[in-house]
Image (cartoon, rainbow, N blue to C red; front, side, top):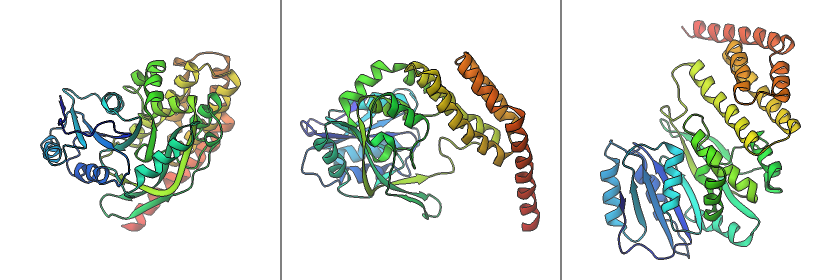
Length: 347
C-alpha cells in the first residue's frame, strides 16, 4: 500500500529512502532529520515500512498527514527483508538521486543532502558519494567512533578493480549506507544486471552489496569529509546473536557472498585468491579471539560448495594448513584463559 498526497512535491531532485521495520522508538527522529533538510532544490522522503506491528505505521501516518508535500509511505503487505525493502522503495522513489537512511539512524547536518548532491552534480564520473558519521551507543548516548576520513582505491577507479577493493575491505571504513547518495539510474540497471545479489541477500549478510557493486562497476566513489550522519548501535541489531558461534557463521556468510560476487563478475583465479587470502586472514583473527578455530576450518572448507576449482582448493588448503591453524589454536586458548581470569578477578 502506498500513501501519498496529491500535494507531494513535483520533480524532486533527490529522494531520501528510509527502510524500516519495527523501529517506532526511533523512526520519528529519522524521518524528521530528513524532512528538515535545508535544500535549495525539491526533495521527497520515501519510507518503506516492512510490515511493522509495533505502532510504527500509525506514527508514520500522522507524520505523512503533517508533511504531505514531502513524505510518501510504502507499507509492504508482507515482510520483504532489508534488501528487497530498499529495492522496492527506491523503485517507487522519483528523484534523480537517492539518499538512503536506515530507520534508526539520522542526519546530523541540516545540509547533508546539499553536500552529497553537490558532489554528484559536479562529478559525472562519480556514481555514489558518502560522508562522515559518528556511531553512538543507544543505551548511553556515548559516541563510540567518529569517521571523517575515507581512503580507498574506489575513489580513483571503477569496474572490476574497484569491486576487488570493496570485497577486500580496502578502506578504513565500509561505506555507510545512511550517509550515502547515488544515481538512481545506475542502481536500477544494477538490480537487473546483478539480480543474483538480491536473491542471495535472503541467505547472506550484506544488504548493501547490490548497491555498492552496481556503483563500483559504473563509476568512482566520492566522499564528504564531515559528520553527516549518526549511526545508532543497538544490542538488538540485525547482526546481534546470542552465541559467538552464531555470530561467527553470520559474518562468515559475507565471505561466501563475496565469493559469489567474484564468480558472477568472472574474477580471474589470481584475483579470487588475492581476495580470499586477505579476508580469510581477517576471519582467522576473529576466530582466534573467540577460540573458534574448528568452526573457522569448517566454514573455510565449505567455500568449495560455492566454487570448486583449483584456485579455491588452493586457498582452502593454504588457510587451513597446520602451520596456520596450530598457532591460532594456541592463541585462541590463551585468549580464553585470559577472559576466564578476568571474570574470576571481577568476582
